Amino acid sequence: MVQFVGWEAKYSGVLSSIGKIFKEEGLLGFVGLIPYFLNLLGCVVFLWGCNLLAHFISAYLVDDSFRQALAIRGHTKYVMGIVVSMLTYPFLLVGSLQAGLPCYSPVFKSWIHCWQYLSIKGQLF
Image 1 (tube, rainbow, N blue to C red):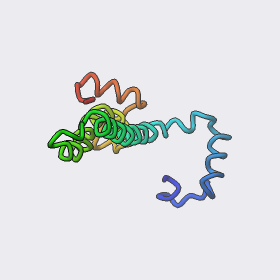
Image 2 (image 1 turned 90 degrees about the horizontal axis):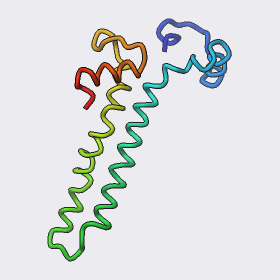
Image 3 (image 1 turned 45 degrees about the vertical axis):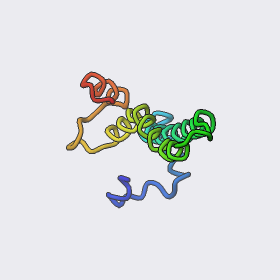
């Protein structure tokens, strides 16, 4: 991103830049990607959890002989989205705040610091 904004020419492509960062800084050069992986993990768990729970409820808990089974099956995914979002929200929030702009959010040393800060403030959920 800095190369794009500052018109620098340090990296020539994605793979070569990964190799160059690893050679110059080692594994610690990629620590800044952890918030993005937390965000991605939150999204994947959210989608997987919604679909798995909605399928389980629709297939095994709602009986076809029940008069409003079709209506319940139709709303199951929506309700499961709310339930699963409560579980995955901290991952999405920490990933977004850690990668956010300093003028809109505090500057955090790491994603763990961000998680602890939000937990102390009672804003993690």
